[in-house]
Length: 171
Image (tube, rainbow, N blue to C red; front, side, top):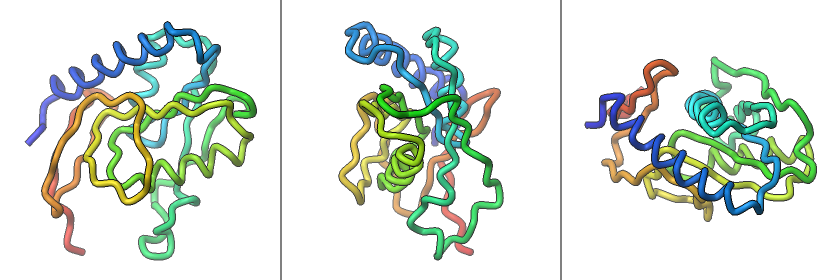
């Protein structure tokens, strides 16, 4: 079980180093960082501050773009997306906490394109669970983890950030 903040912070530090190196290459000028609610938004806030990214920080709520909306219903914690500017022609740094099937990222891309067509999207994630259902891969990953099918990984926070492995509820 991953349950302490040291693990989450160590993964976050690796993400910062990798993202800093990527941005130093200079092929993503004036990037717009956007975090996916909720865990991705917490991580994006920390990365945005620590890397001193000049563009304002944005957040996405992808609830209305989920392909399991009919099955799971509306997320009771839906929040509006907050993009401080258009995504048209921008280099987007899209941050999420955990990538598993790829469906959350597909929904996030749909939401992003509602605001304009980005020049590029760099996907940044704290953990990759390597259980893809869609052909989506992260560019920057804090770490990889293999879990049992009856488990989920949850980032709690925002202070302190902690990773937890939980059993799926049998509702």
